[in-house]
Image (cartoon, rainbow, N blue to C red; front, side, top):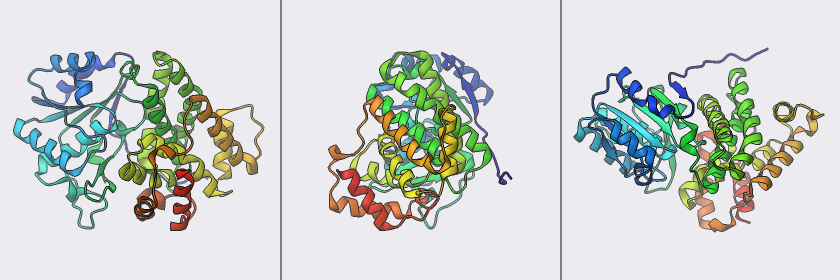
Length: 383
């Protein structure tokens, strides 16, 4: 019997090669008169960045996007939007630009600090209204262009927090695979592993449902097939399109299911040690599966059978087979399996343990995770 579920996804998705050309059509639809483009300084100077800027009359450009958007930078962005009297936002970039745009769209209207809306704030206030956001992702990974979350770092504690609201879904997501062909191999790997993580964790989350499982399974299958091609042939537009599609599917699934142990432990790794988010959650997938023991054998079997239809996979062996598949994927794409190069230290690990144990995603893991479990995993990653 299928579980009850609620599904809501108000973002219009425009998908296809060169569909960035449809941005003006989207602007007109929402009656936006004065736009703020939020991006980083590198993307603003690319050919497609310049073309976008030149095509929008009177556009204001904010390029001070941080890799891990912090409270201060988001408040500064919102202040600029207010000063410029903008009534709409375009976000061009990866998760950092899109999360900055979504968060700033709240504060630019309310005049409040983004801190007041953080999920970790015991006195947080409800998000009631936002400026419209048009998201144009340039990576295939974060899924922020189709989610109700924005990840924000507290610069003082280095803790990664988030805001959550149906109001911060972008109005439109323009997913143009052509924009991802210039990604470096390292960024392709990190963002590709983020896609895999969103999809895998959506399969295991306590709040998973039949609808999101279908999206997650297709995303997982696509990553296993096409991420190695993207790494080997960066300008292969078919492969880039498949990964962009997988990212969209996984982002929608994750938005409804949240993450599990890998995201709960991965966010502190990014906040405290600067580990790229996709790499952090990617290397943690193994530990998420190992920690479940045989709790989710059925889900593991579904994944293995969906990715490899000819695989004669017994339920009790599915977890081990899935671990082997992940290990082979890492070998194929040339990705490290630990975080030795980030020099995790004892003091930092203890801080991360405290952050991870209260992270919302950790609580959605299908089995209970203790501080000692978390500590042991971090020490294994330390190498």
